[in-house]
Length: 134
Image (tube, rainbow, N blue to C red; front, side, top):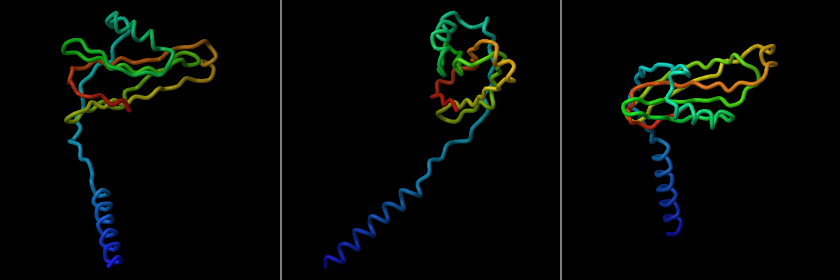
């Protein structure tokens, strides 16, 4: 009798385990987002101040103004100057906006000249969705 109970418990546990492994979250199809990369001189003063407070470290945050959303990504203190940041893609689904960027390095001879604090500000419509920085 005990053996039968153990076998039944094992089978139920195995069934729960297998059912949990088969569960997959499906997100809706992602669509591209229209955006513009902002020049530093066109940023709101409050946003510029917040960037300057955080520029020493890697950071990312959003800043909203009515129907406009600014997505800010900074790569912290870097040796040298001339770095570029490329937006690889910016997409959204039902509940999230996804932003994927990368820092483009500079030749070694440019790394010998001081420090820089590369960041990018992306301006888009405020979709009122959670943001995922990739």
